[in-house]
Amino acid sequence: MVVYRDFSFNKRPSISVKGQLLTIFLTKKFKIQKVFTLNQEYIMNNCKSQSAAFANTIKRNYQFTEEDARKLKEMLSLMEKYRDDFVKKFYDFIFNFEHASAFLETKEIIELHNEKMKEWFNNLFSGNYDPNYFESLKQISEAHSRISLPTHYTNASFNFVRRYFLQILVTNNHMEYLDVVEKIVDINLDVLTSSYLLEDTKRIIQTIKSIKRALDSKSVVPFYQPIVDNKMNHIVKFECLVRIIEDDGSFLYPMDFLPISKQVKLYDDITKEVIRKSFKDFEKLRMPFSINLSINDIENEKTKTFIYEKLKKYQSIGSKLTFEILESEQIKNYAQILEFIQSVKKYGVKIAIDDFGSGFSNFDHITKMGVDYLKIDGSLIRDLPENKEKQVTVETIVDLAAKLGIETIAEFVNGKDVYEIIKAKGVDYSQGFFFGKPEPINFYLE
Image 1 (cartoon, one colour):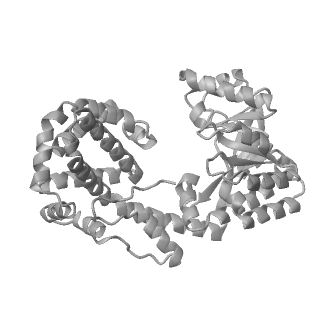
Image 2: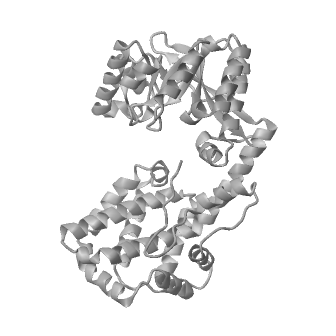
């Protein structure tokens, strides 16, 4: 789930607009109210108002004084020495974000973005926070909105800015400027996010409506992506991946609706719908298949009871089914996980650990859980041909898994070069767009 920055500075109240709205959805049965602090509401309204009044309001809310402006001007000559280095490192940082890398796709756009960043950097330490300055920030914010830039991208960018400036102050022994730097960074962050915060809220509301409509109309559906046996070079099983079909025939991806569904207590209904439909589908398709389960699913007594009931009803399904459990530091109660695994294994169900190697990797726990498959995380697979360290990591995982009698599956296999390395490293199965994208059941029945 995207974590939005907690707005807090000096005596200003802490706020998470998305969190407050979702709380209201829960308590008021989706009767939406506007819940902003006076400060945030004032910012939102005045983004469309006179720039002078807006500038004065911002400076007053942050107690931005002439002394603050003077200190920032004093820092200008020092900061200018770091400007080009800042822009280069900022670019390297944001290019790791998928959305940013898609946006900064041409040399011309990259050069323009870098020039704009230099301009912003100089203005930041000018000390001249007049209406024109805030108008320029508003224009940047509107540009972010036009390209649908997520709020968390801006938050992450300003975390980088904050760390970079702190490093300069420490290196040059100028910690007396820390407070004013913090103040101006927070001002910029608030102004840059305010313009498109409402659009983000509208998207959340629309997504909730889509989830409820989809559950009511049975348009929560599983799509199936093939998994290939690397020795036999053909499809041997499928993974179920949930989609929501919209009225116009388009569909929503899990990342678009699952985090929000958890906040509004609709996630369990989605899980049950995927299980219900995939069980029916695989009475027709006589091949093995897998379903993703979160720790929340396993901890939820109603969801577990639903799973047990379906396994009893569909006697032939258990021997074809694998539950993929997301590897996570959230796993605190291993006894509860083990109890669930032992219960479903009585029906012939196999267990896979999903996204293995993404962070929290514990072979001791895996051996106790009786795992049948490890799905190697896509972050280790995507750029495998160019990354020797990741090749070594994959090889180590495969060797350890083989010694424990556990089979391995590589996710995100996107090309022949990756596939050849995967096979050479001894990975048992592969999954990715190189073999096929997720498709509805009719695609395979036909």
